[in-house]
Length: 384
Image (cartoon, rainbow, N blue to C red; front, side):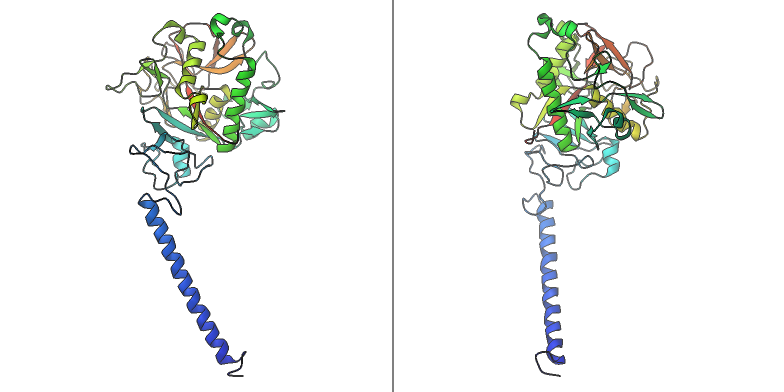
């Protein structure tokens, strides 16, 4: 009973040996964790990787702040060529930790080498199964065969509702689509797009949003440095940025601004992000996110309104780190109304009292110093 194979002394010695081995293994695991953490903090490339950056802190590959290739709505993917930026409301620019939910909902900012800045718009539910369900889950689109169709919302003080028929009718707000009364005029269209190419653009954007659960929107309204499109604070005294309604006259039309938005990060030249004029459903996703976090997007507020023509010049005209939704310029979108209008959103510096969610419309050939655009980026996806 004491010394046999199953004896008390034999079993006691076996238990002691197993305990010592377990302690040794646990110590080895702790050493491994500590080494991985130290390696990560010092910019190493093993274990939990700190994303690789260049000498300016710009990411070399699409990655989350914790080194994962694809993130989530609340831990966004930072595209190659950009870096996270600390702001007063969202602190994540040091790259040491993943963002907190509070940071995401206050507006996470990224910046490229030119200083252009963009804010992450999280989208928990990109696609709804029906138009009717969009009101409940605040999705951006429905799937119609192989194509996506935008869900567009009307906002009130207590929430938002999908415009009935926006995915089936062409005599109301809808996207993607041409406005055939003008887009067939080659003096304006000039081969920029077709009905089918707009659908393809929208499909790729939505495929990215489904993969990454969000997209980036310009922190400021579209600007120009010379003829180069940028998204920077034009109020900075050291800046040479002018608003994108300046310059040659075609830039003041929807067509000119559509073209400039695509120039920022063209799909054929960039494997990190693709730029675009904002879609109506992207704008509404931004409004839904802001409203969910307590912003009064359906109410005008003249005390916040930027009454100048310079983006970023009123520190009060800011919602979740996005500037000039109350004023500065009305912003063209890719949203269509009937067969002859493109939709603008928000208010401009020239009087009036509109809210950030407000819709107006105009002919896309109209030349107006009161209109500019809001640029967006979607993350390039190998899966799309």
